[in-house]
Length: 160
Ligand code: PNS
Image 1: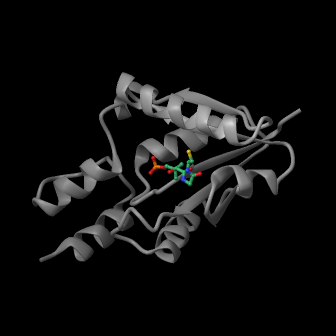
Image 2: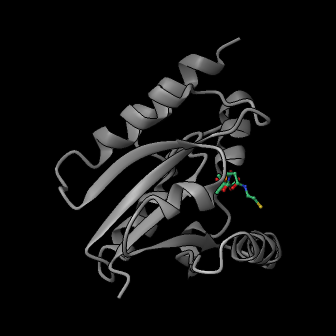
Image 3: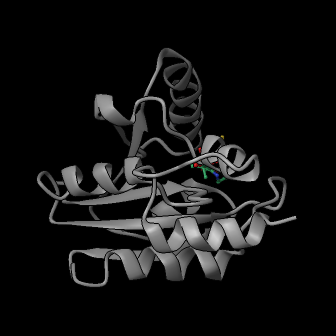
């Protein structure tokens, strides 16, 4: 029985869509570990430790949520854990195609690897971290898209 969810991603930055997914996953799993990926090929606005500490702050009152980081293959990180299943959010068909390939590649790498897809709440189906970065970078409003303290930090970071 796989009781614990691993939610991997870049989280650059964490959005209200991510938070909604974690809250819903907590209705299904005993715990959720948010696993921030170190991606050397994808430059991030916030460093790894910044992303981890921001996410920790958001979930500081919830002892069923843990925040970790991992480097290298997701399958290897997951293999080091017991009774876990990976969750990923799906917003659109485009996400599905990408996520299907990712899940199947991971399954090819590890025959015990399982992914559960959770559909994003409709109110967040347009939302992505890259869109948030672009809107803030161009001076638009991201009200309601991410926690206020992360929005403030991102505005500071993207100030030219
Ligand atoms: O939030 P993202 O950027 O869509 O998350 C993608 C992530 C981090 C889940 C994915 O890139 C990943 O698993 N990276 C770790 C390296 C790996 O295992 N890649 C997949 C091999 S097919």
